[in-house]
Image (cartoon, rainbow, N blue to C red):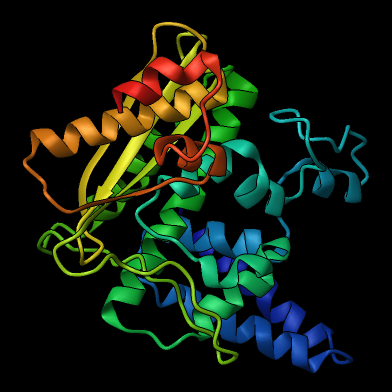
Length: 303
C-alpha cells in the first residue's frame, strides 16, 4: 500500500545511492533522471513505486532472492523455460508474451532491449513524449503491474487468468484513473529510435486490424482463445476472450480464434479487415498454397 512513509523511504534510498556512488556518477545521474521522469507520470503513486523497484531490481523474483542470500530455485515455476528474472516475468514468460500481444500497446521497435528492464525503460522515457505516446507509456505500466499481480495470484493462490482479461484489466485501470478524460484512442505504432528502428504500424485508412491469440491451461483446464480489434487510429474496438469446450492443439486453437475474429467482423458489417497471423503454416493453408493437415482441415474449409 502506498503511504507518505513509503515515498520517503524510496526517496531516501535514492539520495543515499546518489551520495554513495562517487565512482559511478553517470549511473547516479541516470537514476536521478529516471526517478524524476517516472514520478512525473500521471499514474497511481503505487505504480510509480512499483516501476522504480523493478528498475532497481528490488522486486522479489527468484533470481533477486538468491542474490540476497535466500536460497530458492531460480527456474521460473510458471513456465519452466528460463530463470525467473524480472525481465522474464515482465516480457519473456509465455503468459507475458500473450498478455503483451493482446495489449492495447506494442513496442516492437525496442523489443531487443527487453533483456534489461532498465535499458528498456530508459529508452521509453527518453523518447519524444507526445500526448498519445505518454498514454501508451502509462498503459504499459498498468500492464506490467497486472502481469506481476497475475504471477503472484498464480504462485500464491493457484489462480490462473486468461491473458486477454489481464490486458483488459490494465486498460480499465488506466481509464478509471483518468475519469475526466474522454475515451482515448491509443495508437499502437511503435517508437522509432534514432537508428531508424520502426515497429508495428497502425492499419491504413478505413481498415480494422485484428490480433488473435490462443493459450493452454485456461480456467476450465482446456484451451482459451481471444482477439483484439483496433481501428485505423489504433483505438480499441473490441477485446473478447472465449473458452473452447475441449483442449485443442495450438494450431487448431489459433484457427478457432481467427474464425471468431472474422465472425465478429462480419457481424459488425466491417468491409476492410486485416488479420495478423504469426504462424506461416496457417497463412499458407488459408491462402490454399498447401494442403492443411487432417486435424484442422474442417476449420480451414469453414474459414
